[in-house]
Length: 348
Ligand SMILES: Cc1cc2nc3c(=O)[nH]c(=O)nc-3n(C[C@H](O)[C@H](O)[C@H](O)COP(=O)(O)OP(=O)(O)OC[C@H]3O[C@@H](n4cnc5c(N)ncnc54)[C@H](O)[C@@H]3O)c2cc1C
Ligand code: SF4
Image 1: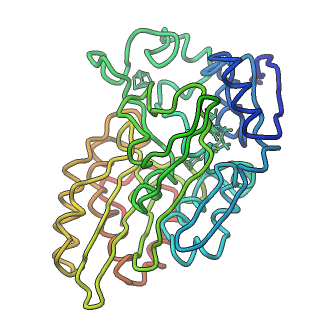
Image 2 (image 1 turned 135 degrees about the horizontal axis):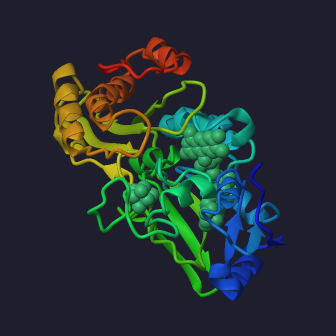
């Protein structure tokens, strides 16, 4: 059985108090939200903070405000986010992403902020301490080499958050607070393509809030590929959000890929849809363009060539759902299936 290393637990009740503790404790401390990622990582000694700052008592992090747009506190659970009627009505991609993270039990603990700050993942890293020691560790923790690409000077571990691509497609902004002040930035600018240093969050900053613009004229969708339809980390996530004029002409479009790189990828292919209709030819052209940008590496479930091959099919599903096609049968099939052994052709 893997045991947690010892740590000191502090439980502030305000954001100001939490920020002051984080600043005083420095790199020895980690924020603990739902703990569904951090605690397993600590058991595997991937992270070994000596102080945990529990955020559960900080009421400001559980704010929920809707007007023209939507404001979500980083401490809201994913179950709460997925069940909120306004999220289902106006921000379908977010509802679909939040509802597909892990299992019901975990979503009742897991928070939106924790999902956005989720550590990157890799077959050579998400292993016990003994397993990692047996291969002399890797660059992400305790070692010097990258086992996925030994000549790489950068860690290629994958961004595996489901809500990050959905929120980027929806144009989300986030607020970060520290005892030095507060800043706001687009979620798209929060991530870096580096498996170790994967976010621009400074060590003393707390992600406090996510804000979404008015999405009444938008439609969005999130599609996820994973081995077990019941629950699993994504090996591909596709979020699409499209705004159309009354006559059906696309005026804005964003397509974002998750789990193919150390950062969610906001594809240029959304621009191909602008000015035209969301017909089959336009969807196929956009899906192929998105797929060209996806360059998965060999550090997740399934072969990388198969993971690349399925990208256009999943982009197509997302865009057809955004168009208004009834995709329920395809969704149900994906939710029920376990891809074991992996198919040799795209499963769609
Ligand atoms: C079996 C299993 C399956 C899973 N499947 C999925 C999946 O399919 N998709 C998916 O996306 N995730 C999955 N996860 C990972 C995890 O459950 C979720 O990502 C969850 O949303 C993490 O949120 P949390 O509140 O538990 O974060 P925590 O574990 O508490 O924290 C995660 C990280 O975020 C930091 N953090 C937390 N809150 C803040 C904040 N407000 N400001 C700054 N930093 C913060 C923590 O310090 C830590 O580094 C799975 C986990 C398990 C155990
Ligand atoms: S991509 Fe390379 S350095 Fe990063 S976790 Fe995997 S093996 Fe380690």
